[in-house]
Image 1 (tube, one colour):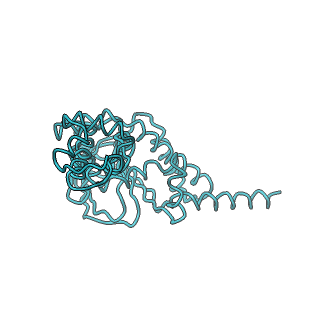
Image 2: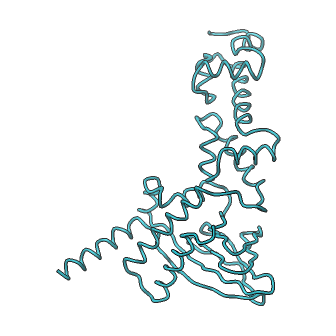
Image 3: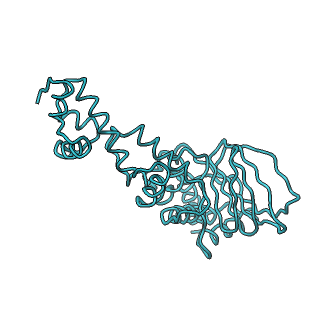
Amino acid sequence: MKKISKLWGFKMIEMLNNIMPVIVKTLERVHDSSWKMDYNVHDSYELIFVKKGNIEFWVEDEKIELRAGDLLIIKPHTRHKFEVVGNFKAEFIVMGFYLKPESKSKIEALKEIYGFLESLENISSPFYFIHIRKRSNVFFCLESILQEAKENKKGLLLYIKSIELFIYITREMNNLEIKKGFDYSKIAKFIKDYIDQNYMEDIKIGDIAKKLFMSESSISRLFKSQFGILPKEYLLSKRIEKAKEYLSVSNLKISEIAIMCGFSSLQRFNDIFKKYTGCSPTHYRKLTFGNSKE
């Protein structure tokens, strides 16, 4: 019976190991302002959670001010360093992990666990950080993992706690509130660049919001404050400008142009085009090209 139980335990660990990130390190650090650190780079993701104190963290050449309750996740191969600021010591947890190839292939299927990593990889920034609410499950889970690591235990409980941690982080990011003081111009630029590169595809602003783990209303306000226009209006204007180009220089059917420019139906294309230009696509073609096939 003991052999069966032990065998089952090994199989369970093997199964979890095939789908979960591998934990490289889990450390707890306490430093004061006299401690300095040079830039370093890791092959793995790095997670930093600040328990107490204030830290100035540099990711590449960008400074991030971290305080108690802040959680930062850095992409692999990213230069970073930090220093403690203020008169008090800083206490924080550092966790390094990476994905096996078989794990990477399962990210989409395991969104409940990997959602936070998918979000991180879908933004141009080399890092992502959020503020963890007081008494969050993320904090208690990190403490449990830290205790397991201190006791040099690499058994089933460590894997279970890792799964639990990633689920809680994903949930926190799903419920993310915009963090004050962050440079949101970079997020606004990411949204604009994404639209510029994909406006002819069937994309929606809500899809972009999901990639950033933000609400559609939040990214709309953010985008408008930066560019003076709502992202939805910017997306439509890009599509209309491309449609005008096709109408002026090609013999494509209007229904084909509608699809090519990302509109879900000919009727919607006609309505939006008239709203932006004051005339129908057919009339616009006659004015600018004069050779309609419709």
